[in-house]
Every structure is written in C-alpha cells, then in structure tokens.
Amino acid sequence: MNIHPKNLPRAQHYIQRQFNSHSWWPKEQPEQAKHEFNLMQADSTALNVWCEKWLDVGQRQKLNNAITD
Image (cartoon, rainbow, N blue to C red):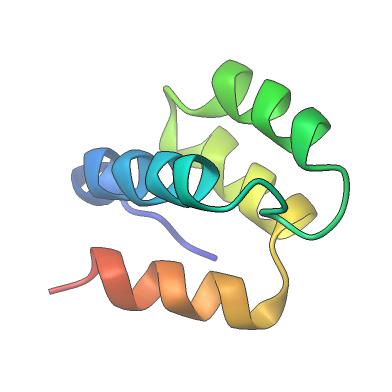
C-alpha cells in the first residue's frame, strides 16, 4: 500500500466508513485494528503500515481504487 499524503483524507474516510458499515472489518481482530487505526491515521506513512498489517490484498486494492483519481 502506498497512500500519498494528498490522499490521506480519502483513505481515512474510506477506512472509517468500512468500520462503520462492517463490524467484522478487517477480518482479523477488528477491535484491535480500530484502536491502532485511531493511533496511526494522522500520518500517511503510519497509515500505510497499518494497511499492510491489517488489510488483505483485496481490501488494500479496494482502498487503493477508492482513493486514487
């Protein structure tokens, strides 16, 4: 995942929307993932690390599609 700083707000919004819509998202330990997201979302580099840790390939691709022009 490579979230560019200019796309950070879009990425934050997309991920938050997924949390709000799907209690199981991401598939592994969603509550821990939410907690870490809250800590790491303010910086694109940190959010990239979060994505690599918590999202599978398909989820990362959907995020990438949602945030790129």
